[in-house]
Length: 261
Image 1: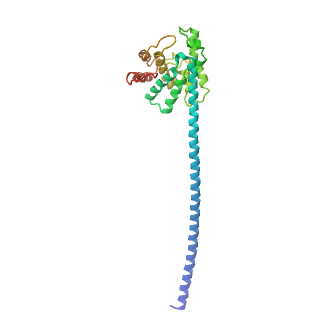
Image 2: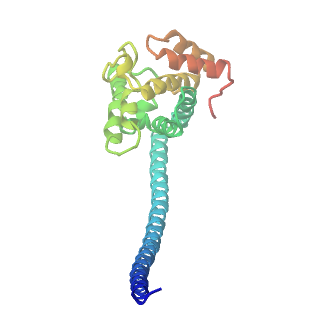
Image 3: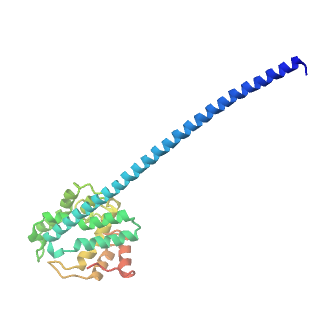
């Protein structure tokens, strides 16, 4: 190899070494950037984990708060039911029994748990308007006069006026207002017909009739379940919702449902 060739080879080697040094520096820089991004990702993951923990904590606190709110609401419902029964002791237990009949019908209709709870609460409170009816009329052993009967009819609207002030998660006030409406428009207080009556009220209408006829009242002895079922069967698709009547009859006659004590 000549001196000139040797010089060229050395120059090439030096150039390669220089390029390799630059490449190593670039690689080192890239590695530093990767390490920096990895550290940032670790910090971001830690922050995300902290945020998720905080969200889970708040969610748990919200569940507890909702449970307490629900318990407070149900305690209020029970108090209202007790006050109603104290006002009209001759029908004590009526609201609770109506609620259980209505819930059984609702279950057969496929209501979910939330809707079933709503119809139970509606059953508990559907007669709360009677609190504003004179006790001597509620407990009168004889036949009511026309004016007294009109006062009794007012309990649906009076109940609505009270219950509409409470922000229930179910249409409780509307059920109280409509539970004496009838499919042919012969009910009260609004003379509603058919589909204009909400389903919960149509269920309550049947459950209320069955329980009331089966139980003792100041003006008559208990008529029994059989007569009560015959009454709703007679009114099927006329005064009472046909599907609700069919389910109620099936519950009692085929599935052995009994009115709770």
